[in-house]
Image (cartoon, rainbow, N blue to C red):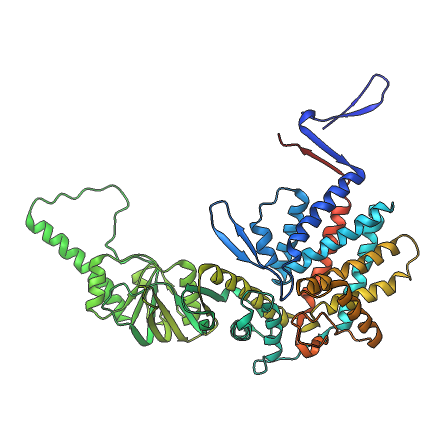
Amino acid sequence: MALAFDEFGRPFIILKEQEQMTRLRGLDAQKANISAGKAVARILRTSLGPKGMDKMLQSPDGDVTITNDGATILEQMDVDNQIAKLMVELSRSQDYEIGDGTTGVVVMAGALLEQAEKLLERGIHPIRIAEGYEMASRIAFEHLENVAHKYEFDATNIEPLVQTCMTTLSSKIVNRCKRSLAEIAVKAVLAVADLERKDVNLDLIKVEGKVGGKLEDTELIYGIVVDKDMSHPQMPKQIEDAKIAILTCPFEPPKPKTKHKVDIDTVEKFQTLRQQEQKYFDDMVQQCKDVGATLVICQWGFDDEANHLLMHRNLPAVRWVGGVELELIAIATGGRIVPRFQELTPEKLGKAGLVREKAFGTTKDRMIYIEHCANSKAVTIFIRGGNKMILEETKRSLHDALCVARNLIRNNSIVYGGGSAEISCSIAVEAAADKYPGVEQYAIRAFADALDAIPMALAENSGLQPIETLSAVKAQQIKENNHYCGIDCNDIGTNDMREQDVFETLIGKQQQIMLATQVVKMILKIDDVISSSDY
């Protein structure tokens, strides 16, 4: 883009390759941007809530993903429009920060954009709308803190955590066994949580899956599961009180780094070479035996001879174990990763109460379970499922549940779900709008209307009459001054979310409102879009 002046001194803009550029300005640009944002929100709207639909996405190489997790849907969608990409980023940041509520945040942003469009048509300046939204989001943010509940729990009473995780899982495909999955998620988080610092390192929870079995067979293992088997079929399948040597050096004779040539011209020379090699293997295996190891886990492969020797010396071994798994095994068993055989000492061995190999079904698949470890700070959730898609979706759902449990440990405030928090905020924002003189109050009212989009979508997805249901619940909230009335999605017969045990984390809800408002402000401030038009 360049600025030039004609002979009368009037400025005009020269665009490079003008014929290939399209330019949207002013209100047209805002309307185009808003419709792009709304289009993305409309896709996700149907997958909100316990009765939400799933989406099936096919990637260019033919992989099929079936999911109902907002962040995953948008990640897999091939989005070209820049504004739609902002919505993808929005749901991704909610996923990274909170882990749950990725669909709701996009639906919320879409509703705010829809309301902004009506205000723009009335001739209100976009900056004023953005300022009004900012004020309203602050009112809603503070109101949420007022209606939130502190939830007391400890390592013995985990029921509150389980209930909240069940709310998260109820909108997923796995909702038929949400109780058991929620318990698994909470126990896993509490096993690795540092309750004094209120911190949870989710990297210590390994989620492993195997096709076959049924969802109910999903189990939590206080230890590590490795998708490998013993290196020799005749090695013992179960080792009790194992002392584990964790090696990152291969069981192979040393190879000189430079190019070399060995001339063997007599049988004796060949035999000495062979003996030398055998002695080398002998020493290796002997070093492992001497320090008292009863199981060797190695990152690299074994020579056949080494394998055979290990088998003879009754030293079970596992080979080709990945780096991340090695680290987790070291954390769980309290061992050290040893890079050279010379450095093996008894202190560096990890300890585990039981190491066993388990076979699945009629396939040859075997996995090694390392259980009853010295330090159970690393746990594995082992998922079974009918097919690969269910497995993947269960992994995503469990990730959401783990994140929710972690957020509750960090901040134990909750708000009630089922749209009750949004309706309550909407009433509070609507009431506060009258206190603001000036154009902003239109925007604040619009924000209150936009907050109703989430309960409305919940009602719509549950097959209820959306407007009727919403106005009934809203009237009930105002009449009884009761912040816990929400949409009865599961047709239980009560609107009180306390009885239905539907909770969400406070920080998750606050983050949703703040993120959605920020993105909408950003979209409203764009008034000129210059892009290269496609031929």
